[in-house]
Length: 595
Image (cartoon, one colour):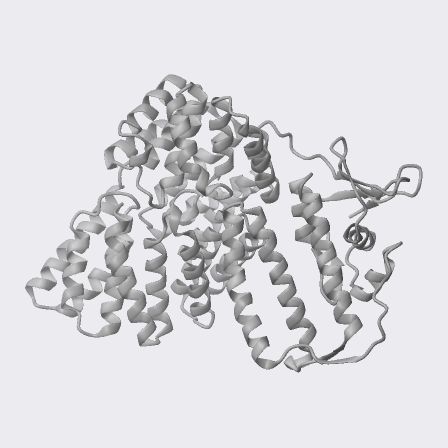
């Protein structure tokens, strides 16, 4: 994490010199071209020097709207990269506004990327999701490499932040494909470094080592200013996983030196964690106290806010700095359920709940148990074995054994071995049991309703119910579905289980309506009243059953919500990442079902 290598500093000075020459010659076109490249020569977090001033000079002189848009975007990046995101916001807003009005997808994509860079703080997550989705839409039909690279990197970053494992894998694959198609060493560098981070998260060290080596070789080719920072981050993460104390000491020294020389609190806070993990508790404590001289409320709410505060909290909780632990818990609680990443999503630093658990445990607060449970759920969901073991939860070995059956007294026994709870019989539990016995098989809502023993199915005489919804309603449903997707991700990021469940049910209901009402090529269907009544009844019954399960076992309810789908056709799709053996019959009856 040493100061900027000489070649990076030389390139920066060459740009400044060339810009001054162009200005002296009155060559506005050359000044503009040079200004647009300046942010790419900045190291993230380091002071920007005079670069923003030079870009601003070109920006003020720009007349053509497209060029002014690009210069506003460049100026926004320069301020954010220089550690002053607040100055960059107004230019990012102007860039997006101009890009929207111009109707040029490439220019708009550049503007959206700058807006995402400027909206990288912890409180901007909802807006970041919307901007990321808009960037993905804008670049969907572009052939240019840079806009597509930006869209995939932002999609990956937001996916990590909210633990969307499927989206993480999809974006990693998209980066691989872009590298293959473009033949670009720069894209390959980003693809390899982000896959290396993923391999470290899931503790696949063999793959991680290969990818770290590849990242290093590619970094030597591309000349990115942050190559050294990327390699230090990956090296430190690997040292943590394998317990390499000597390497952790080296990284602690590098991070502390660079953090102090450039005035970057997040880097210094990471150094404190490395000192702690290498056994130097005294130095970790000193550094944490240095960083909190004016209190944690003074930490800027920028891209590195969560990384800085969680790092300091880890140290404070370990060395008995109770006041700092309490302060950190207060600041972090609004961001529970969020993943912690460094700038650029080069390294993963756990989930916010983990640090809330550490703070509350250090303070002997009973809430520590709740935060530990949330932490384990988060790490289990993303397969973060090493992180899960850090909170004293052993890695899963084999399948979870889950009891899900009705006993002789008609009561349901539900839960993992040793954690079963008893609950009253309701139709939704019978529907779930029926689906769990048929993994991967579509079961119509009518058949499912008929299968619930002791609960009569829908038996009304079939009549033509006509069109299920009219065209105006369909359009409204589709618009609402678009909004719900963003709201679901936000609810998930805030660990708001009640809101998440409510939105999920609304989404399923709308999807049912749209799917049931439209057939091949979008033609509207006509359905019988019994089919529609069964669909609604089954969905409501299963939702009520899941709420009942959630009261006893949040993780089990989450698993079922993620894998059971309701509608005109219902289905249970097992999650390979959370394998389970379902004990679906009372003891001494029939065998268990694996998925």
